[in-house]
Length: 313
Image (cartoon, rainbow, N blue to C red; front, side, top):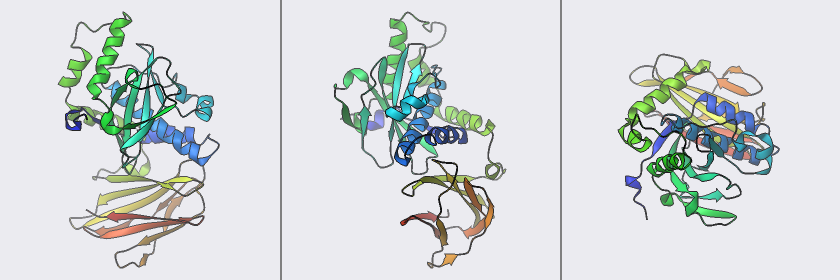
């Protein structure tokens, strides 16, 4: 078994732009299940694209099969084209808590390998967990892989460099090779640059304040439709925090019918008011909670009851 502590990993924040792209593609699917699959696939591909961008590896989102609606309908595909070597990566979503995931083996043409992309509970960021070269995968229709079977991302960089050399394309001679470049990169600097890029994208009105903001994004399955519960927390003073809740549609342009309750520590329903709304979202008026205080958000729709727990810290 590979020692995971020695494997290079990388965390990529998921910007609003990434979610907008995923939502656009998911809304065109015929079923909520397919919409969710496509939503996660697009986020996975986008995250790997961002990661490779900071390593100086060119990608082509628009030419990737997963960016074509006709391919999304008939296949579970999350590929990313690497135009400099005429090969592609398959970006495999891994849900929170999963220790294994399935490799889709229906697309193997010009395939370099598989990249594991693990989501956190809030869909706010992903961790690029590792790489598995295609020549290490047996030829089956579908194969189940443990996360600990993924190899270091350093191996991915080596494969890209080797593919460039093999095709007699541009070989980097005036600067360190990609693997050395990766080792010399300050990961914290990359993360900060990623956040800088995200902040330069058009931001929603509820995320433009100068105060420190904690934003939690939770995907909620209501049976026939998925929605996002966005919780934004900003300091009120040393003992209190300002909490703002927003619900957004994912699969369609309209929120489903639902009942929303905010429950305090004494299990009493806390009254709430709507600040703004449209067919695709509802934003509640902010409320104040003390440090250490807990509350629950309960959403009921079509006989399904979802309870999300929060503690102010």
